[in-house]
Length: 336
Image (cartoon, rainbow, N blue to C red; front, side, top):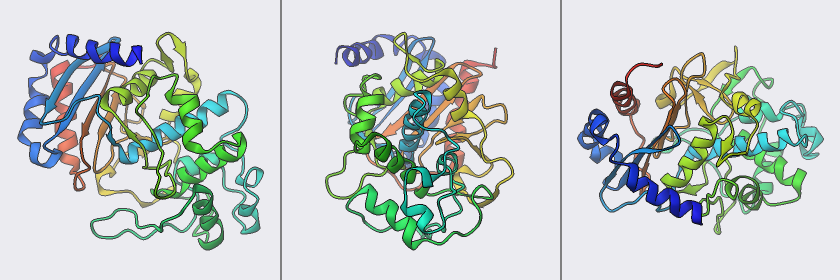
């Protein structure tokens, strides 16, 4: 809690230091406020501190809000924590942990393929106004068992990239089996507490949790996570995730996989583990949610950014994200 308060006050104390140099980005946001949302927070972290903030409407960076598909980056990081501990390998087959998968001829899918959306399992149909149509389940176990029993293999794992919730949710279930803990409790203990993310949660009291898109967080707390990734796995001087695991998250994983479905917002991006990779060298990565938030890390310029709205919006336009990011790049200048 002390760290959260420190970060909160440091946020306001330092936010004005760079404000005059980020006028382009702020103006783009103001010009597109209706689409972004009337209540939102914009934070930028660089050189060990939050250097810029813009708050619009009745919202603050320490207030919890849904983070949509940006949740899966947290899930992938949790998987890599267990990789660091030697409890799991990315190339382990599901048959090693989930007996129901080999029973239905899906046991040879790997954890890596779950995180990079190349499981080959027949995906949910997409519909107008809703990117992912899926049934309601009482538990994550019930949901994952449904994928094993009721969904066919559309192609061999690794051959098709099809962006959807199944892979990350299967990976989350594997972690439950390995640790004998529910996913929301496990990620609280291993990732959120070390990162002082006290108000970040996957808990869902009405249906199954979703490691893919079911988390709520605050702009400040998600920035703790981003700063850890930017600082090669370190947070407050402690190694939370190995540098090798951070690099693995950001590495393009999909290779020559045929693209069967990428949301229009993400067209042209490659995919790592739980995150999109914008540049071939991995210097710019993002886990943008199509509804909220915009989240990205620019390793070239050494900063991380988040734009979090109080409420999820209609599906955002890629051009808007590009405008904001380009404006930040112009304000910061070229890579050093």
